[in-house]
Amino acid sequence: MKKFDPTTLEIYRALFTSVAEEMGIALRRTAFSPNIKERRDYSCAVFDSDGRVIAQGDHMPVHLGSMPMAVAAALREINLTPGDVVALNDPFAGGTHLPDVTLVAGVFLKTDGVKGRGGDGATGRRGDGAIGRLGERAKRHPVSHSPNLPVSPSPPPIFYVANRAHHADIGGATHGSMGLATDIYGEGIRIPPIRIVRSGELDTDIMRLLLANVRGNAERRGDFDAQIGSLKTGATRLLEIVERRGVKETLEYSDQLINYSARLMRHTIGTIPDGVYKAEDELDDDGITDAPVRILVRITIRGDSAVIDFHGSSPQVTGAINAVEAITVSAVSYVFRCLVPGEVPASAGLMEPIKVIAPAGTVVNANPPASVAGGNVETSQRIVDVLFKALAQAIPDRIPAASQGTMNNLTIGGIDTRTGQEFSYYETIAGGTGARPSADGMSGVHTHMTNSLNTPAEALEYAYPLRVREYRLRQDSGGKGRHRGGDGVVREIETLVPSLMSLLADRRKRGPYGLRGGDDGKAGTNEIIRGGRARKIPAKSSHKLEAGDRIRIETPGGGGWGRLAADKRR
Image (tube, rainbow, N blue to C red; front, side):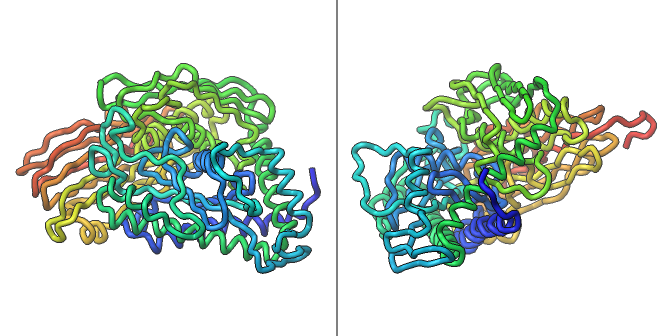
């Protein structure tokens, strides 16, 4: 292991993380859709020249753990040159589901003589042996390019920057692209790795093709522009670090951050008793049949390494809850990162001691052309639940009860009579977190694989022909116990124009589990209210709404933790 200065390492951790955070700020402030600028449904990250993640913003866990696979797919297919931006959303090429569009760009040293401590500038020499270092990296982590692509004579990037944003519509059969399609072709436009910016110029043909296949294309175009601008912000800040600190030191400490994360994770795994820990849980159904969908995991801890095996999970299903491999790896990464105490560099090193086995053709690693819209939002949550359930056998005093276990995905779309334009509203709805061994759960928050916010009522009503009729905590929905689960929420929205509504949710048949004798949280409910009369609707379904109809969603509460004597139960 190369020597390093701990203080300098911490400085670089903060520097790289601040780049990812500033990328997120730029994206949020310039985006058009409330889903990005209000709910913050996006993520940003910095990668080294091998495509290994160095730093991430504190954004969406389901994006961050899977984004490295998308970047790897982009680098396999496209030889990035200065000014290029690659876009992709293909779930079978490192994506998650179609609305999540990833953009990737290389960061190249300037040709006007960028200098830094110990550096020789960037006019072809790179300084400090940086060319040699990048060449060595290429040998250790070769990138296979398509034989039909020309090889660029330009120097390779020293970093990559990437972001992922959930577009409120990406085409398909239903508004919001989150309906019950039975294959991926019905879910929206599928984007393999393609250049949308070439040498700094937007490819207008590609953009016209994309925008012709989505609803609310002006809003989509604004969000794409915001993503491109965010990448420019990240590249600028990374080059400023290189200019101040020098190429050699900057590259060395990006490696050290990855190695340090790996050591922290190995130490954390080493604190878990050796053994095999098995657990299973279920999704209610796939929306096509009533059959539950099982997820089974077997965690094997040996010393400072872990094997996460999902053999025994249900085969992939017809409905839209299949997860691709990137989602499953992302959920595993999130759970084990939660176990590491203190500030840990969110780099590729975190997954070095962990092996994930997700059998192809199952609900945790579906094959094309499976529908996958809900795998990202619902199955990812259940994977987290089952992982924590297994770990509770090994380290019971460190694991919380189950949180709401769903994102309660709601989409409403139609024609806004105020403007005559199509609209597409998308939102996930908060719920309760599971009680912890030392404290109650939190109420009315987004949990685990989502780190988004709500859409404020004022912003929602301004942007869409919708009205929020009720929004409050769902009292006593958290499970009882020594520590009580957090409460879910009640959200009731009225549509002011004829609309098509789609709901993709779970934990409606069985509530989130309690631990150590704590009660389960209450399951969620869904209703459409028309003319004062309410009728229950399935958690995975689409419905036509008339003007004045209301959709009412009551989200699950978290599970309780610990047993109480019968006369003391709350």
